[in-house]
Every structure is written in structure tokens, then in C-alpha cells.
Image 1: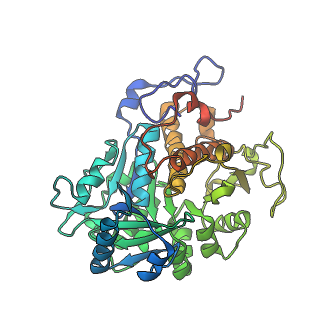
Image 2: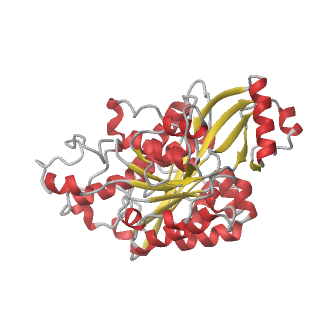
Length: 432
């Protein structure tokens, strides 16, 4: 995809065609295009362990749990001594997504959070900064007297991931460090369920302040759910929060089950549409689903084969561009599904971050929408108050391809953009 960013645009806005408008390059130089995310800054420590290791340290398999400083240090020393550490990376669900967004778009993103005040070469904070794209703006981070947070990922032989989180300074972000003017001009505000775990943590009230600011400015709030156990424990809270603040929800099948009580991904996505305007639901080896709304007058039928699962011919309007329900006179629910790109990589080195990669692609398309509105303000495309630049179907292709790239490497963070020959993955359908 060749926008946002200072890239060629001939594939997307060919001004020689009838109905297309030329851009104003002077205007573009002053218009900001960026994504803002609030995160618990962490360093991911990946370890290969046996089932017995989890039992020994009372770690619930497949879940995320909080570790106190003493237990975290003891576990770290054990895996370090026994050579079980596979790698130490900059982490955090939102941090991963911001990094991947900046890699894909070659554009700025802004990270909000807390980081230890004293950074030395080789420590965890240094590793976080070193492994984060230079396009991610860290200048708004709040300095803290506490140490850097750690997220230990324990991978068992069956590929299941279990997380142990050592907080450090990850929850220290206070409302005073929420820059309202930055959020008001963003293409989207990205948050996670993790930062809403405890209402007593400073980061909780900071997130509420940021969401209130985004809501008033009509900046889309995108929320990734993170872990099923947290959603299940605070189900009513999260459903209420999503209904009030969130535009787009990103989750996997287990998190969808915890939020909705429905095991069927299509029905779960339909249920979440009662709370939010757009849903990204990843289902591992079965690919991903996208669900949203479109006004009946702008609904576009697919030219692909129609499929029926728990919803009859669910993909009929997958060529439509999703909208906020409140912007629809006659809202229709729309869905699309895509299987893993090329069946998935031959060798999957790490499943950590595949969902974050898919979300980064979706956020890239949200940013492209704002970019296009500013670049070609009189375009007929802007007569529709859509959330995204591309159709639901096209976004699913792009998200699917990015997930493949993450799965094929041993890190949740992309080290390069997609190959140049694949940049047309995001070319949108156009009504002549």
C-alpha cells in the first residue's frame, strides 16, 4: 500500500480518469497523518518450556497472568540458567501494532505510556527502544522511577503460549501525560483491554481521558481484547465500555467467546456489532473474519461466490466499505471471511503477534481514509462517510497477508514492509 506517507500515488488516484480529482501537494505538507496508541511498555521474553514447568510455577496454560517481582525474577533466572530463552524483544500488544503500522505505512505513529527514567545501554528500556521503528514517536512517554515491565512468553511443545506479566512501570501513565491535541488530530486511537485491568492503576484513568477526547473529536477508538480470562472476569464492564467508547474491536475466537458467550465466530462478530461499528476476529488456522455496517444505499454486492454458514450468504456485501452505524440511514450488517494466505507458512516459528499484524493492516487502511479525504477532498468517494479507504473484502486480504508475514518470522514485529510487487493488495474497488 502506497499511502499514507510520501509515496507514489498513481495507482490510487489516477487524475487522468474521469471523476478523479488532483491533489494539492502544498496542503499535504502541513496535514498530519499518524496513529496514536496507549500501551503498557514491556519487553517480551520468549522461552521454550515443557508442561511440567508451567505446573511447577502455577502458570495457567494459554492464559496471561500477573507475576510479582520476586516470582518473575526467580523464573527469569531459571530459564536464563537453563538456556530456555529464545529471544528478548520489544513487546506489548499496542506497541507491536504501532511498530507494524509504521513499517507498513512508512508513516509516524505516537506511543503513549510510561518508561523507566534511567536508561542504560543493554537494559530492558534500551532493548525496547532499539527494537522499535524510528517512525514510532516516543517523545510523549512519561518517565517513571520504576523498572521496565516484562512479559514472559512460555511456549510449550504443542505451540501453546502462556504469559507471565511483571508490571514494573507499565501502569504508571497519568492523565497529565495524555496530549489531547495529539489525539484530536489522529487517524485513530488504539488501546487494549490490558490497560483497563485495574481501575486503581493510573493508566486506567488516563485511558478514559484519552477515549473521551477521541469521542468528542470523532476519532475512531480501536480496542484489542488481549486475553480471554480478563474479558471473562470483567465481561459486563468491557461490553459497557465498548458500547460507550469503541469504534472497532479486534479479538481472537477465545476472546470473542468470553465477550459474547458464542462459540461461532460469525455469530460472535454479529453480537459485537451491537456494541461497536467494526469487528476484526482472527480464528487461527481458519483465517479471519471482518464485520461492519454499511448504509443500504451504498451496499455493494460481491462478485465472488456466496457462502452460507451460521448466517445465510453472509459475504453478499463484502465489497462495501464499512461505516459507523450512526452514519447509516438504513444500516446493513456486512461480513467477510478469508482463509490463511497460501494456507499459512510451511513453518510457523511463532504465533505471537499475528493478530496484531492483522490489526496494523486495518489501521493502515483507516489512516489511508483520512489521507484520501485530505488529499482529494472533492472526490466522489468522500460523499460516503466510510470508516476505511477500502472494502471489507480488500482489507481482509491485506490483513491476512500481513499475518502471514508475522507468522513466518520469529518476532511479533515486522522487520520490513511487504514486497513492492504486493503493494497493490490495498487498491480499493472504485465505482465508476
